Image (spheres, rainbow, N blue to C red):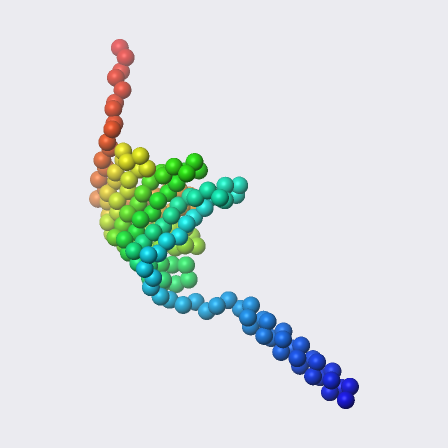
Length: 153
């Protein structure tokens, strides 16, 4: 009787342990499409409450864990002061949420936060961690409000 109780207790303990372990397992990765996608990226400590960038898209199709095909991208990058540094717009791009990058072989439009600089081109790579934006082809630049200074004699 004592052995039976001990075996029953051990069985219940093993069942409880197995059940809690099964619940702790990560949920399986699922691929899908979502409308009105948005995510925010924040600065590293001690500025973790300051917004560094927002990534917004009309549609997002998850390709793999952390990799999304975005349609109608609008990416805003912000300075530590909260001031908008630039806006990137593209009809389509791949966004890697883990690496914090966005890239496309298609059209891209970039405007500075103050609206005085406009860049358009084809193909880009945005790397948030290093704060680099590369536009690769057919680049057009428009600078407004530029006033050259006069040279003193």
